[in-house]
Image (cartoon, rainbow, N blue to C red; front, side):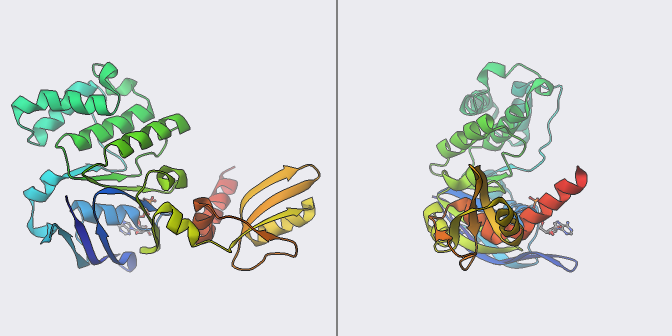
Length: 300
Ligand SMILES: Nc1ncnc2c1ncn2[C@@H]1O[C@H](COP(=O)(O)OP(=O)(O)OP(=O)(O)O)[C@@H](O)[C@H]1O
């Protein structure tokens, strides 16, 4: 079984520290890096792929530095970058056969391998169609298929579900879950539900550091005592919504139900509630959520 060890891995761009002394041990299973935009996920994943060199620290694969492994490490790796390149006029089959050749998959195996990965991602029926006729979800699935061509022991997927509708998102999650046996699967996302149920380990990343790490249940536990429920009059609800991180707000008759994430009781009458992973995310990324909201408001 493969093992990746990160030892105080750091990446600095000019005066910006994108990844700050991250130390981890990753083994078989799905590892979900969860964080807001700019948290450092892509930078970390690019270092894990060997396309970006750390400013400091080391990445070891089965005890050897990946920097010194060159081709051997590349053969172990499958990578789906955020924007993966494809030829729109190629059919899915031709595209994968072309990439199999680029990845030096032996010729006598390539045809079967292409069929195997097409089957895995549910694109066998569309293999002769040109990629330009594919939906966003089909293109992402093709992206996974290309990453699997060399039967990688380490699969790295950067924001694999971006732009997908809920049905495709679920399909994608199931594909990832199914292929994690015997592999290290590393994926990044800013969408809690992408990793909540399939990740063996969730790594919450903020400002280049891992701020929470563990199973979904363990990470969720970290918000115990910080989630509050309260039924407010509309005016009070508005005031609380501006003042606190609110993970849910809905009208209940003349009143408003609020779910608030706060270190201490936000108002008289609020009662503690069972936390969820969304609450933990909001607790750490309140500012990021507000920035997105402000941006959206400005763009309206
Ligand atoms: N080549 C670069 N030069 C300068 N700064 C960079 C570079 N690449 C990334 N950064 C900065 O490093 C920080 C982390 O970026 P990164 O792309 O790794 O975050 P992320 O969590 O993947 O976010 P996103 O989901 O938006 O890609 C950001 O502040 C970003 O602006």
